[in-house]
Image (cartoon, rainbow, N blue to C red; front, side):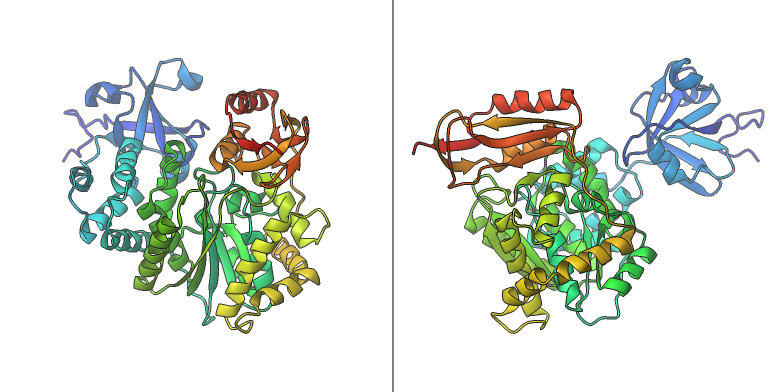
Amino acid sequence: MKNQFQDAAGTDAHALRPRRLGIDTYQEPVVYLREDSHVCKSEGFESLSRVELRWDDKHMVATLNVVTPKGFGALAADEVGLSEAAWRMSGGCGSGTVHLAHPAPVESFAQVRAKIFGHAFSANALRDIVSDIRAGHYSTVELASFLTACAGGSMGIAETVALTQAMVAEGTRLRWPQQRVLDKHCIGGIPGNRTTLIVVPIVAALGLTIPKTSSRAITSPSGTADTMETLAPVSLDVASMRKVVEAEGGCIIWGGSVNLSPVDDILIRVERPLDLDSEAQMIASVISKKVAAGSTYALIDIPVGPTAKIRSEAAANTLAAHLVEVGRTLGLDVEVAITDGTQPVGRGIGPALEARDVLAVLRNEPQAPADLRERALDLAGRILEHAGGAAPGHGTALARAVLDDGRAWRKFQAIALAQGGLREPVVARQYHVIEADAAGTVARIDNRRLARIAKLAGAPRAPGAGVDLLAAVGSCVQARQPLYAVHAESPGELAYALDYARRQAGVIEMAPT
């Protein structure tokens, strides 16, 4: 009997040889066929078609690009080229023969269309959608549609809970022997604010358990994992993570490497270029990862300011209530700290520049940013009081003692060593200082535009790129005094960022003295 891929003569007409092309498509599986490929002709495939690859007893859905016969090192007509993401997902395609065909329709996308037209998601619909996303059945366009459908306050609390539960179900869920497993997270929105790298060693130095899994940047110049990666490895598997936590009581690693919420990592890939971070997705992302990490308690920092992610106290209180409710539904004790988001925290904006500030605080260096230090101590104090490590009202004092006497720095070194070794952050080769046009007082700093400058300079992709803030709100400056410096790895990226900076009035707003 012929199989579905055989022609009338019994020939395996759709059999192709897989070839690794070494093309980086990030997390999106992409495959390549020659335009004169018999499969392209027989199936009517065009560029950007969704195709299903089958080999042995496995399958994968990918996006197709069609190339000329001489493209990509003369790809043969009987070959299918695989991007790095596709090669990883396929495991090298097993026995070495691949079949291509049209994938089955993604039935769950009908629920996304319904949501766009005003219908609520059911829990079953969200489970199906998240399952299909995890399986790679959604194209980038379909992912963008799902994210947009969830934005703009369109998701109710029941939908947010269901989305969070569905995301937890699709990943690894860690279990720890300790009764209390602590965590800390910031929703972002202000540059710098790299308090996690200070809080974790303070808490762990007192014998408490805080296995911190962190995200990479979505819309910011650096995520916690990006900053930590300039100091120590963060891509640990579950077994390695457990060894670090067993030895040191804490870790600071990238959550994507332990598969805690793989659907969130897929969505982040699309959120990043869209510069989109809706409340429902934010809550589902945060809570799903905390639950999956085995945490029993999480302190969540919500910075509030006119150019922060959350603009008002009222919006912060609403978000806080939703975080607490969703966390409670999934068995997580959530505490919220509403903090000042009117300006960046610390001086550095970008992975290595933020890491430099963290090291200065941990090492108790005289020039360490006082605002980063004090914010980290306050957050650590709250966690210590909740966990019973400090009496009510005495948490910050205990955290300060652990930082001042060097225990936090020693613990950070031990964690970094356990994760693979401590290193000094890199220094970018190019920089340019932006000066004040006239004397005055710094009245306002635009977080979003300053972060945009850092990203245009290359952060977080280039670890040393970013912005060094040299004047804080309230400081008096003279004409020609430095306000901030832009750092980049190449002259072209520096020029790109500076061109944007010069066209933006009010990145740092001055008031006359």
